Length: 399
Image 1: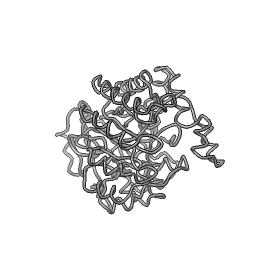
Image 2 (image 1 turned 30 degrees about the horizontal axis):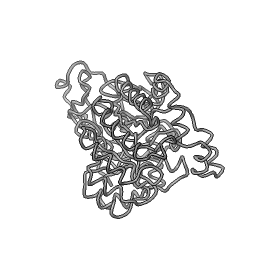
Image 3 (image 1 turned 45 degrees about the vertical axis):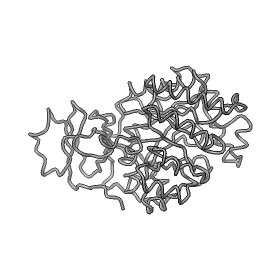
Image 4 (image 1 turned 90 degrees about the vertical axis):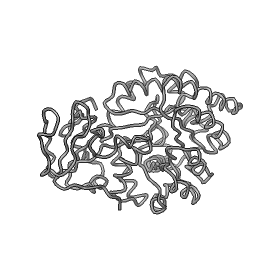
């Protein structure tokens, strides 16, 4: 069981001016005279107050819809069959290329509001649905606009190495060169905080990824990886050695990968909603990984094809049912461990003085209700950086 540091009859003091936590402890020990400015009191009696969720793996910015594929999969069509008929990622790439930046920004803002409504206070969002110069830059520009306008903390990830686009399939080496060149340009322009590579037989080989990381290591960007999703190809162990902040998916991870993660600071980000929504792949062996000493994060993998899911609480439910995780492990995975997956655990992810006041109030007397009450909105209040964004179940912004 993970230690949540529970405080019965607790109180939280927030400095609204700085958006940080001033006090976290027992209510009986709270000295209001030591708090800054005027106090706005939120009565959370009989409820759970906890850190806001950190969704450390999403693909928030995309054009079009793949609803038809959802129903085709339900009727038994395979991912390969759908892709060969013009569906899959290439369909989203085409729609994203056609969409204007304003259209992408409007749609992504709406999706982000849904995440916030479900308690997410920090989100990472990737490019990777453009796969050419103007479209990748368009997505990254939207990411930065979200960062500047949304109340949540938004991190931008360059994922030019998501898939080799159709028009470049006869020139893989040339496309890897393109990714490397754009990676450097993106880093220099300040359009991303991280870069990511999908290492898989259907995407990029390990030698190709090694070329990209050799260039990426010369930038200030942090490395994240789509790793060992469908089989154990050694990506996780290599990623740990390369200094990746996180290795994500991991449905096919083997013992060497687990051992490498356990001996490192690299976080294993698991995405159970992807297998649930897509009916494709296998769930990561979370129990084996936790018992082996790995740090586990949970994220939604919000994307149009394999996980159009906006809810960390639902992701927790799936982690309990399909990966045998406990409620305590789920909460740690969606807060402080997810903060480590983004390299920000020193100032968010837990309720401690000096950290950013990203706080949610659960409309239930015990945290175990959060994964248990499926389909009910238990997020009563959302406070981000000391600002009340959702109050008594009502969003203060459009949702």
